[in-house]
View (tube, rainbow, N blue to C red):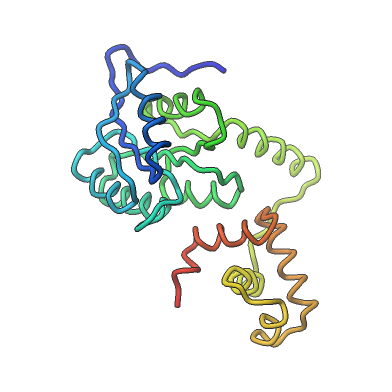
Length: 223
């Protein structure tokens, strides 16, 4: 993989936001082994990351998406609102299209999978430091392949209908198909169709993916 170099003499100031100490220490060792990267602070939760970004104004915050007190998506939005000069690089295991779109819409400048190699993270940091956006190459390849298929078939994923969204939301909070059908006054078969259509459009594979999507959209925080 080709590396992305920054200008000679430039130092990229990075804040690490990751709730697992061992992972955070490993990331720090990797980043500080590079002559052009400096880790200025660490945060173990989203709320602290937001405060540290406001106080220290790093160039980049490497943000784990799943963190206590304030999740990474909420923290990314708060950072872009209160410290717009800070770029957010999301670090996560989630590789679903819906998650990437949501993160980028929240203002993240990049997206790297935890299961990728260390070079992927370093390339992302350097790319974002130059003002570019960055999407993990394995995900970018899948997206490009999907785009070629869509162009060849003339198909495009459509947005969710209100009913599909209602069904998905209720599924995420644990309602059975029978309960959803009763509350929406539709048949169980219709619930199954709406659920299948919604998951296909969002490329969600199972209920765990649905719950992750619901968390990103704040559905589980609603009364």
